[in-house]
Amino acid sequence: MKIGLITALVLCIFTACAQEEKPEILPKEIQIKTATLPAPDDKKDGATVYGYNDDGELVILRKGTNDLVCLADDPNKKGISVACYFMALDPFMKRGRELRKEGKDAQEIQKIRGDEVASGALKMPESPSMMYIYYGTEEAYDKKTGVLGDAKFRYVIYTPFATAESTGLPTKPHAKGMPWLMNPGTHRAHIMVGPN
Image (cartoon, rainbow, N blue to C red; front, side, top):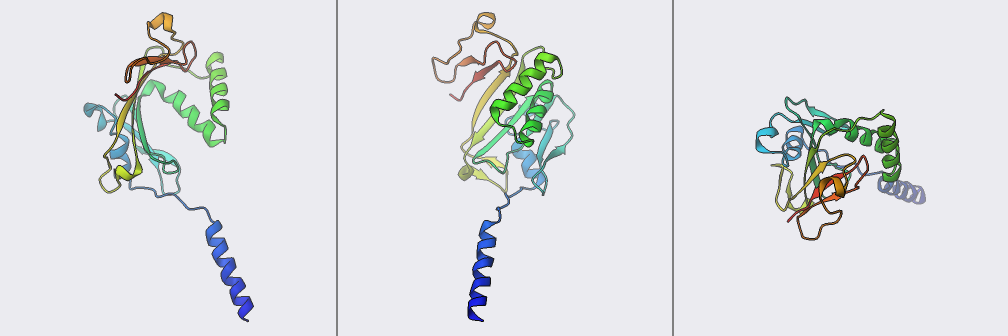
């Protein structure tokens, strides 16, 4: 009897430990507030916001009225990182999310999207398109207010197929916070402006 009870108890503890811990999903209002932190003030209230439902699935939390799309922090990743981007980038970003959900890694996603852009199946913006990123640590994040205390900005301006020759930008930064061109000559070409 005692051995059976001990075995049942050990099995119960093992099963509980083996279960995957579900990430905490914050209330919709807090997700929206945090997701729109990087947006310019005049764009925050009208931005479309993607966030997470109770099952941890990425869904539209708020349909917007302007040209900005914002992403809430992914509860499955360490740290806090939110981003807002010009709606012309949405097909590109959405395709990346779909491929990640299918289990593709970064290299596979890069190749698939590159092939789709080359074939015309995936459209990239024809003019420079802005992305605002705001990130920091979980320790400095207030889950009740949605405020991120130690955050930094990073700016990305997508300019598909731009090169150093076509923009005059260097392909590496030579000073902290300066703009530079990453992935030149590809569909992923973008101007990086890092934190100062």
